[in-house]
Image 1 (cartoon, one colour):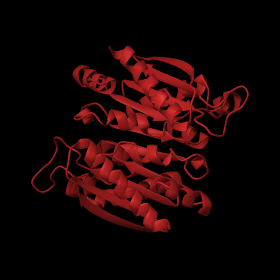
Image 2: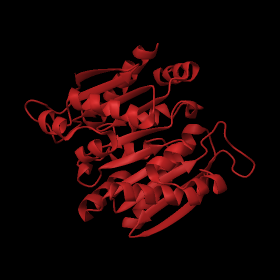
Image 3: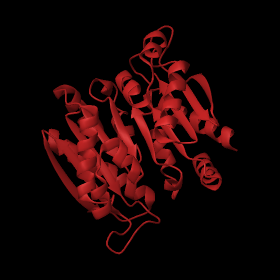
Image 4: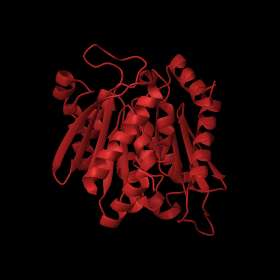
Length: 155
Length: 155
């Protein structure tokens, strides 16, 4: 069974409602989640928040966080996950925000830097990964990473 | 050039800001749009609204529309596209709402029935398509259909 099917079956079985917020993956994680038949029992909505303004308006990421740490930061990823959970009333919410390239990289945050958030059971964990490759490889690696995070949390 | 790259280049060139709302495709269209490098110039956000409640809360689809015509209707698709445009301030906004299966089909609306909306230049057009195949084929055909709709509109 693929990891996303495994995750979907656990969420349905345990009735864990899921939501999320995506920046650089732009809907790829939600597309994976909704590839699982019957997932509507636990999935109501998620957010593709590409701009800073959208992260602030839709998820409540604070302007201070965006100004101080930037959109690609664990601080922002944490607030994105919490915002998605709060907005949707979900039990678990993921977030992905990173630099998929080819442009947008800096010395401190090169292309391939991706931050993740996971809100579950009232706690938020965050992580940063550094992926190599082109835009699509970085986006795909990010999807796999956050699915693994969720699978570990709910298994 | 792939159709999504062609669409992305036109949007960037003409500075047409885009948003959208997805039900059965669950983020696949947004994922395609964000596969285009530099699309952040015209793409700020989009919505994955899987439940009726989410379509109502996030996009302003009226409860009357949902009750009278159902979520899989051109009426709902039109309001979803308008809601996405209104919420995001985009110039063009798409919507997709359908029955990808394997369950959820009825005699009137069998699996494979997918409704689309496109708001552009203050006007909303809607369409219904009937696709054959499994869940993934129906979702993929829906993505291609709505990209074609957008490409025709902006070309």
